[in-house]
Image 1 (cartoon, rainbow, N blue to C red):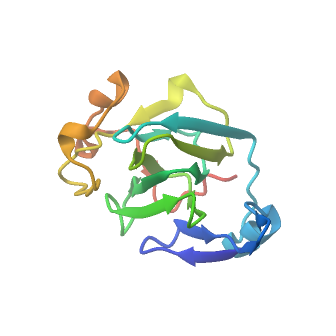
Image 2 (image 1 turned 45 degrees about the horizontal axis):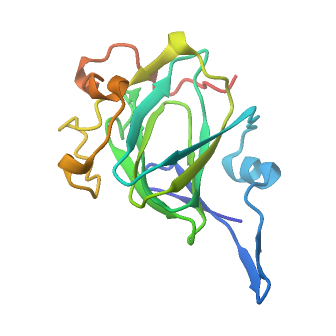
Length: 191
């Protein structure tokens, strides 16, 4: 597995090495020891999640507050998404900036989204299956979100706005500038 830092260095693209032959392929999708060695800290994933969606479904931008903050390792099993991680750490030099990564079942890319980031994705192909690991359990009382169309974030979702399909919850998320309960830059949320 190869790890690539993005323009926001805490967000990491994980590229799997695919071993193929006429029978098909084999790929190692997760190696905790290699990821921890690259990151320089421990990660203890405790839950795997999976969703299936049609083209145009947009899920996000979501995050959980401490002590329930989550790290995510996301990937596409089938189909194609544009995945987004937004820095929501106050005083961070990249506060409000985002990383956008196209992930497909063919490119086998994964995105490591650390605590302190909001996460979302838009589905670019029908019948897309999206999977992710998290290092903390879902906490309804700490669940938060940001409006996917916040102009200050300047996210290009690669899909016509009239084609976007949102949950009721995601239709009413606040803008980043209107949120008070964010993360603090420089705080270690892993201890």
